[in-house]
Length: 181
Image (tube, rainbow, N blue to C red; front, side, top):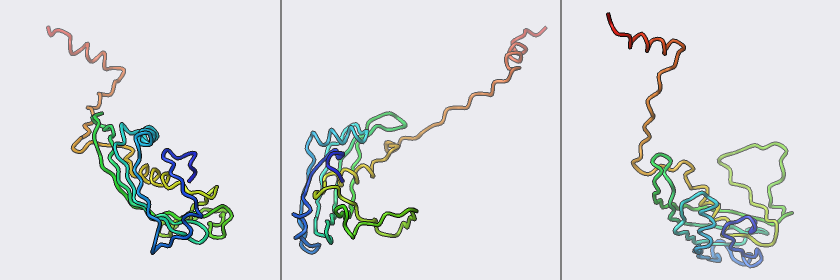
């Protein structure tokens, strides 16, 4: 995850994490400040992002890093049915592995893509010797945001279909409005 594209860059050097193990990880607690929350709210089309916090455990993984994260957020979205703003609390957990470019632990490039939904994700390939841990939290928040938000209890009522207009509809109206003799 590159810090340049992340709305919440929190950078850690891979070498700094390498000495920590999964049993004894480097622990980081992240709390997004107002500027980061505003940037993410804009990037993710939210009315507001009132809170985003994460607890991350980082450890060395071969020549890269492993990140085990838990996060929670309070967001405000606009209901697609009533157009009213409403609050939602989101949370999630994730595990990400990342290795430097050229690592023998990176997934080999495949000419054909075969998807196994039960298999672990291959490790991300880092462009530099740093990893953007805030970017991973922001990415997982974005994945949990409902793209079609609906306020609890909001019900969509379809409008009545209009009668099909035929070329003779106007003539039928004239006949129905004609005074009876």
